[in-house]
Image (cartoon, rainbow, N blue to C red; front, side, top):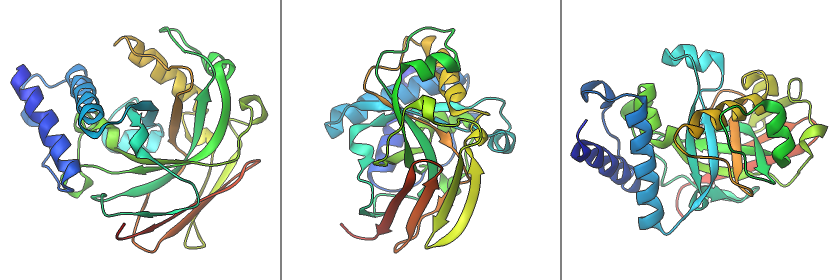
Amino acid sequence: MKTASIDHIVEDLFQAEKNVRTLPQFAQDVPEFNEERAYDVQELLIEKKCREEGTAVSGWKLGLTSKAKQQMMGVHEPSYGVLLKNMSLNEGETHSIDGFIHGKLEPELAFVFKEDVMGDYITAAQIIQSTAYVLPAFEVIDSRFEAFKFTLLDAVADNSSSCRYILGNQILSPEAVDMRLGGVVFRKNGEVAATSTLAAVMGNPASAIAWMANKFAKRGQYIQKGQVVLSGAITQAIHIEPGDHFSASFDGFGTIHASFKTGE
């Protein structure tokens, strides 16, 4: 794949998000566009966003961590993306959806790290040991592709459908959380939209993060001290409409809230 083609894809993805417009899928039409090239595009896109938006990397996120989503996409493993400081929203506030193309919300368990995590043989136990605390979170996922239709390679290039994230205020030691049986009740406008357990995330959210750490070690990347990692969707994502209020109740944590509107 020619460098010019990669640069063109990066520019198209950047402008699509900036101007709130969609693109057709491209991965299947670009010769030799494989997983490595897709992550190349992701890295270049993040560099461009940091440079042009005056922001910086704040952490990482996982996608496609449930077997159901993997089967739907025809893949056998998750994907990962990058979180930026300007993606962070405050918990409990009302946020504008004007910058979203077709935003969806999903509850996740976030990990904040007290030390660097490096290497390609990382285990879930090492993830737990390296974590300062965990807390409930929401992720707003979005996609720059028409009708929210894309292949895994398209999604990876598009920073794994990253958009915004919201961290809750209740923190716990990771050892105090049942990473398999801890339950979550996700509500939209007061009505239960979904229920699940943390085990929906690859059987254990720490296992999902260990997979990611091992995966991107091959690219010279690693989790840095102080970074946040969203471990993957615990339930299905719910489409966001103006006026919507969402809450997610996590066993042992309390409840995280977010509301959305049009306009600033």
